[in-house]
Structure formats: C-alpha cells, structure tokens
Image (cartoon, rainbow, N blue to C red):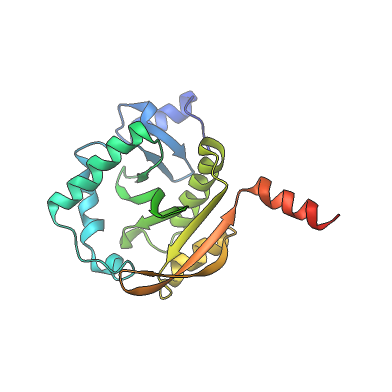
Length: 200
C-alpha cells in the first residue's frame, strides 16, 4: 500500500488516470486506487447503484438520482470530519469508477469493511485486491481493533473475498428482512496477543 508521498513513476501513473489532485489518492494497488469523492462522481457511480445484478445481494431497490447524489455528498462531508468512509474505487488502466470500498458504520458497535464492484469487473480478483489494501489502511490509519463484513449467503463471491482476507464466520443477523452472514477479523496485534496468551 502506497503512502501519500509519491515517486515520479507513481505520479505519472496517476496522471494517466486523469487525476489532477494527487493528494486525493489514499490507497493504491497494482491495478486500482481509492480516493476521496467529488460531487460529479454521482454520475459515474449511478451504474453500480442501479444494476439489479448488484442489488440482488443487498436487498434494496435501485437508487434514484437524488439518493445517489446524497450518498456521494455525504461521503464528501464525512471524509472531512470522521475520515473513514466508503471510498470510490478507480481502475488504473481506464480511469473508470468501478465501485466502492471502505468502512461503514451501519452495524454498531462494529465497523464494517465493505466492497462493491460493477459486474463488468467481476471475476478478476479486484475485490480482494482493493479490500486487502483498505483493510490494512484501516488497521494502520484508523486503529480499528476489529472489522466485520456483512454478506448475503448467496453471494458466494464475496464470501470467498472475506475468507481470502482472513475473516471467519462470526454469526448471522437480519438486514432488510433477510438473514445475512457476519464475517469478522481482529487487528493482527490482537490475534498475536491471543496466540501468546494461549501458549502460556
């Protein structure tokens, strides 16, 4: 995961993606990066917020334009106050906004690590790639002790992502009238502490 200080090659790579505000880039991987939202992003995010192939696993209806705008503008505001949000995911090669990945406060007291990508980018390992980097960002930047991911049981692709991240099944809960799975992972320092205690 790259820091905000960028080498010449990294800057050139971001420039090819048509970004003009380099400091907006928060986390980078080989193929993707996340950055802060800008107001016009709602148009680029709309295909994801209205695609039935995506919405079938989160039990909600397609979002109207005003709700999409509110989501993006809310992310802009919250990033300035709390810091962590669901950030837009940008593909390096084509500069497309292909989804989001980040942290959600919808399941207190837990913080959720969530990801969502456009279907035309499924099956390439991109969700695992960006979620792993964002998870590490959460540990290091925000000091989370534990992260959960809430997943519809029929969404086998996201279950596999959670498992690749080292998350384990931690129960079920009700979400929009459906029973969903809760996967969880503790901060590595807590896992090391538990292992050391068990070995005494």
